[in-house]
Image (cartoon, rainbow, N blue to C red; front, top):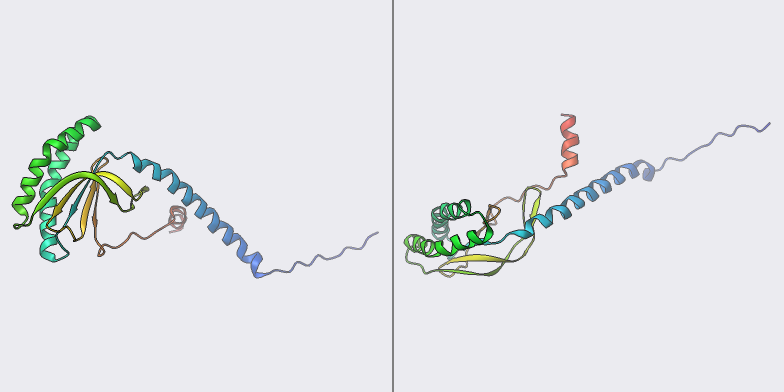
Length: 185
């Protein structure tokens, strides 16, 4: 008969830490897959709207915000009354002169220019949808020299962002981790 030998396993820090590392890797993979699926949803935007302030001075930023508050309802009305992308574009072309007149009335004598062209927009996240950086068809309203902070809006779907450094960035979280924490709280 064979004698029984006791098997002695050495526990190392690596053996204790490895399950946690695997769990974190799985979370990163899941988050990456969700990001890949959400990027494709933002590419079908037909047009955007961008407004550039004269400078970052508080007076110029206030002028930009006043103009934005006056023309945003006009753009919203054009979007809600449109049944197709072509009808939306036609409504926006008809609205151009009204936008320029409204901006001129509020601009404190600064020059106003409105043009439609391809413009570079930064990457932004809205919920689970990531709007990638790229050149988009856009209306660009420039107040004065246009060297100040800007505000931009995706007209269809309706998403608007003030583009300022003062704005706090959203804290990056893993939804699975938040769900697990919610189960135990």
